[in-house]
Length: 208
Image (cartoon, rainbow, N blue to C red; front, side):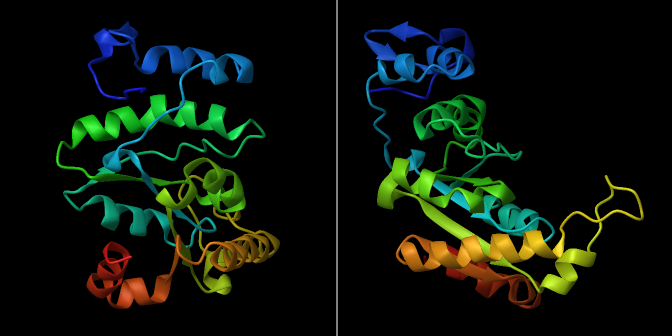
């Protein structure tokens, strides 16, 4: 069994158990052959993820923050983009494991699951589901496309926009396909409903 728990100075091999450091090194090397030489990762209940996703400017940050505020949810604070590359899903996961999961579970001892938010992960649902099977939960958020495409971010120039109409259409299509392909593992939240009634909307996530 591979453990993701432990102090940073203790990472390595201990009593036949792999800890995080060798995973991170191999993931950086992009070596699938070496990754597969590591024993298959066995996750316990507090290591299964919730992925929040949707087009940029759809409210993913707001939804992620509300979910992560729960005392039983560990929080990956920054977007990992772990599954947005063309690498094998196993390599992607070991990268995610080292970069975020270890830290978010250590920071919140009461966590029974953990949540990660990367908008572009909605394009890679099949890859993520293949790795976690039915243990993963996807929470998608969709917002009126007109509002998405005219929403600006402070990092961009006043004349620049984050999401084009074509991107919104394409990523909405990925979300609708995921809802159809994995009905038991996906939940759709509407931004307008979240803003109007945040308590009930978040409750629907925790009841999911």
